[in-house]
Length: 184
Image (tube, rainbow, N blue to C red; front, side, top):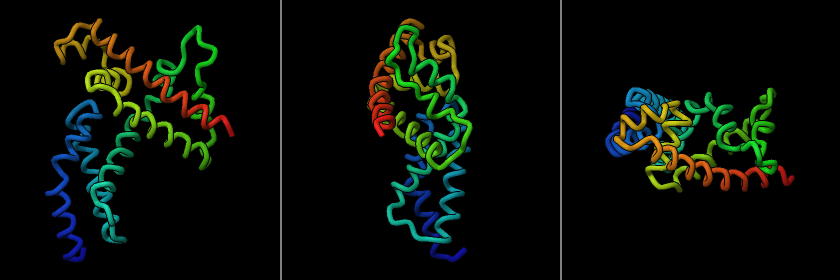
């Protein structure tokens, strides 16, 4: 590794390491997962920096971190879609499962999956912290409401209410995405 690239990596770790770890921690279940993701980000950074220059280091690091977090959460996709996007009485609910859960791994389906997760996280970022965190813990990290209540000291009913508001917001936001996708 050239000395210049080594210095760039050290500077990036010093400048962005703490904030990047905090960003990841807010979106994953535990510190071990956050540290694993951060390590993956730094590994990818060191690999890329050797082959090509990165113009906006901060943006690149946060994008890679978000993608790594998305990869971690993708295994919960089917349950998440069932809980979030359908109601028994709602015939107009978007059918993301038909689009995202296709067997075929074509560039189009992969693009749509990535777009869904990107938009989901953008929509989550719009929520108040309490609603966002309850949704992430319950849906993405698979924690029970009892576990969340123990962790936060809040009543289970309060947590259920917060998640409900989050789900309503996400349904609205993702319905817009669904309509844009199926329009063509």
